[in-house]
Length: 373
Image (cartoon, rainbow, N blue to C red):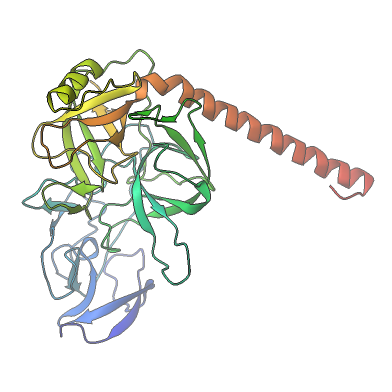
């Protein structure tokens, strides 16, 4: 056994920390010190320097076995950290990732590369199984709203949105995730479950606002005039990985060619799927061996603008057969819902302002007349 005992360490925001009390976090000991996340001790040396402040990346090899039992941890004794300036503009990615230099034989997103990608979980139905269950994805578009598919959310009170996630099997990532309950979901008024899902889109209303940071940022919304056909765009999520036939634990990065509904319909007819696709649909054809699959529903398809920022082009909905490389991924066309998204958010915010105004009025009346509000 490499791991011998458990100690409690407190992470101080100082250089060359010597204390073995670190941020009230419990870490296991190993042969040379403590099993800490790699970003806290990038090379395993005691004096690595403030890695989160520099443009250096920490090498992490997906699936690598080590004495700490987690490829994102390393045996180390010291830690250094400073804060970074955060850019909260929409559509700003981290093209080189943050903190880690990801090494893998398979293609994954870099850590925090696409900070608008949200993981959606279902809360446990009983105390016997307290674990959250991953059910799909979403896109951060506003501090209070996440865009997803209508079929992903069946009862809003049962779901949690997680922001800043990358590796679902580890809690050793450089920056903390934020788990926020979904208090309500707003389905598109024309959502219809037919042979083909129609208008499969919903806005998840968060119980509290998400806090933006360098690894949690919104994507830009398209205008109703945007057209992404023939562009190469990027889908992300944690659905089933066709290469392993298992749900992804590290965020997938799928490069897809946007194809028109008409061409997509023709592709499916050639695959003996003779159905007309609804006008709310667009499709993405794989450029390699990856495309959306089970539990990718609600995840974003992002296209890059000339200025380097990303805009939401589609919302992953379904795919007929994950095992067939030729099957295009089917997305809800975000441009067709741009007005609905903006209007729904505006109406909701106005309604909240009116409620807040009424609450303030009731409070003032109670103070003036000494009555219960």
